[in-house]
Image (tube, rainbow, N blue to C red; front, top):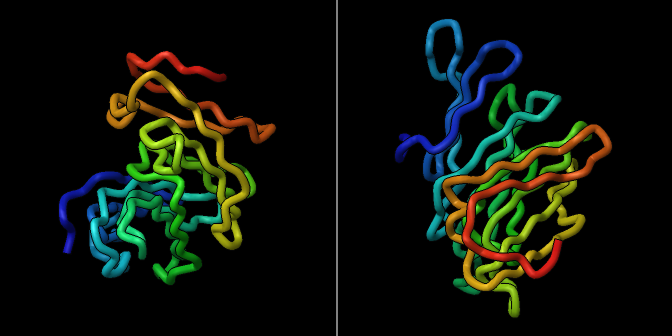
Length: 178
């Protein structure tokens, strides 16, 4: 059951993927019938997810959740596009509230959101996660004079052919670094 759609994407076959709350659903593009439906599981405090399809047709969803220590975390899941089987699931305690999600040509996942790490809480954090495992490859933090909540509704992320990441957003914050 969908808890309110928050993201949608269409694959190369014209099938439609929708995510809302903890649920991801794949619909047949030709007739709208449900091909599969999966739940992200009973992780407390799940927030609406973002969704992207990689070049292999797999589906990556990301958002926020409450981790084992009851502090907010990034939650990233990768599902097999053909049947919805979970390929991997990752929790990362550096951030919450994923604003933007992208995947590079190799299938690596990049997210941007609000940092929760000590000394960076409320700042912008961008993280890259391995295509095969979901393990964090790197994080970059961008601090400013106040929290960056304006990024939540007005942001985007892109990855160029060289793998460089570009994040855009609308904020009144003046960043102290790049």
